[in-house]
Image (cartoon, rainbow over all chains, first blue to last red; front, side, top):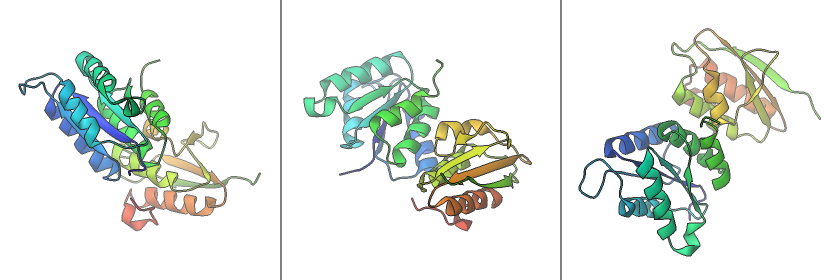
Length: 130
Length: 100
């Protein structure tokens, strides 16, 4: 069982999602569960609920999972993915209202330190315009 | 409550306290139970060194001075480690870095 909150990165572009995950791995390290996805089911720009669900599964931690998204559909599809999770997992996954790259690095740093899901989300969202 | 233990250190790294060292700085600070704060000026404002958002916002460039202060059971170690990290131009290997 992982004792640290997991991070999921969801972008319309697989390149952005992968690049963001690379930055997190490089800056924060490999001690936190991390997964990313991007692109629709045809491989074009977009997001896919199925891919988001797979990423949540990959980064799963009983401490919870924080999702960082880029624009519009990434957020709504992530919220739909959360709703489709089994009931015992649903309450442990949150979508952060934060810029995707900065939010992912900040959230991952906080998760690395053993913070709770609420603290991880709050840290990422400290960056958002009030 | 005991007094703060303080130390000032000049940032000599050519780019200053940029993104990657900010994360490392915060991770090092999180390894201590003491309260650890950092400021650009001795008159403050003082920021929580364990907050990545605050540390990232400091943006201390080359030649600027960072003031560190810590209070708690491992305050001395915290000051030594963090000032050493800055003085060594963010070379984690040359400090008594917390692992991970």
